[in-house]
Image 1 (cartoon, rainbow, N blue to C red):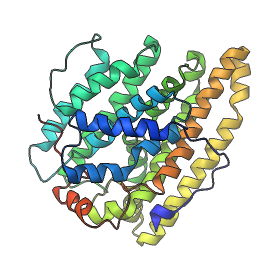
Image 2: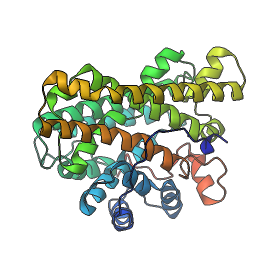
Image 3: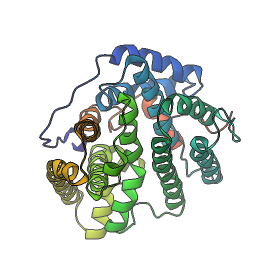
Image 4: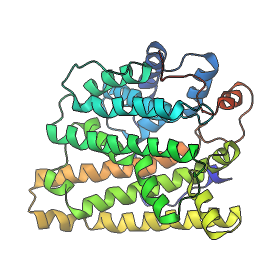
Length: 343
C-alpha cells in the first residue's frame, strides 16, 4: 500500500521530548478557538496526529514554542480541508479568506482581521506569537512563502471547479506542487523554532535556494504517494501519481513506481546539494558563528524530510481504510466536517 512505502533517507532526526505536553495544550486550543467543533470533526482531527508531525519537524523547540508551532500547523491543514467543490460559492469564500490570511503578516502588529471567521482570528493570534523576536527580514521571507502557498491553494480550488485537477502536464504539476506543499515557509519556521536565522547571504545563494526547492519536491512527492489511496477514493486528482497515469497512459502501479523513482532521485540530489554547503560557506567568507547558523538551517530541512516521512507512514489523514464516524466526515467533500470559513 502506498502509505506503507518507506524511502531510504541517509540521516536520522530526533523527536521533541515535549510531545505529550504540547499535544495536550494544542488540542485544548483548537477546541477553544472553534477550529474543531463537532465530536466527529474532533475524532477526525485527532487521527491526523499533527502533534507528532510538529514534534518531529521542530524537535528542538521549547515546550511553549512547540505549542505555538502545533497551533500554526493546524491552521494550514484545516484550511486546506475547507475546499468543497460541491458548493458553487465555495471558491469565492476560500479566496476571500486566503487573502486575509496572506495580508495578516503584512499589517501593523495588533491589527484586527477584516474577514472574521475562526481561521482568520486564530491566525492573527498565532502570527503574533510566531513572529515574536524574529527580524523584519525573516518575517518578510516567511510572509512571501506563506502567500505563495495560499495563492496556490486558491488556484487548486479553481482547477478542481473546472474539472482540471489531475490534468496538468507533469512539468506544470511539479512546479505547482512545489507551491501547494508549503515547505518553504515550514522550513522558515524551523528557524523560529530554535530562535536563530540563516545569514541572508546564504539564504539568497543559489545552492540554498535549490536545497529548499528539492526538499519541497521530495516532501510533496512523498506525500502524494502516501496519500494516494485515500485521495483516489475521494476523487482528488491533485496527486503526482494521477498526473503520471494521465500523461503516460499507464497503469496505476506503473505510475506509483515512477513516482517512487522520481522521489528517490530527489533524495539523491538533496544529499549531493547538502554536501556542497561547506563550499558555499567558504565562497561567502562566513565566520564560524554564521556557518553554525547555516548548518542549523540545513538541519531544519533534514527535520522536515525525515520527520514528515515518519509522520506520513502512520497518520490517519492519509489512511484509506477508515470506518465509522471518521469516514462519515468525508461525505461533505472535506476531510473536516466543520465549516471554519464562517462564524
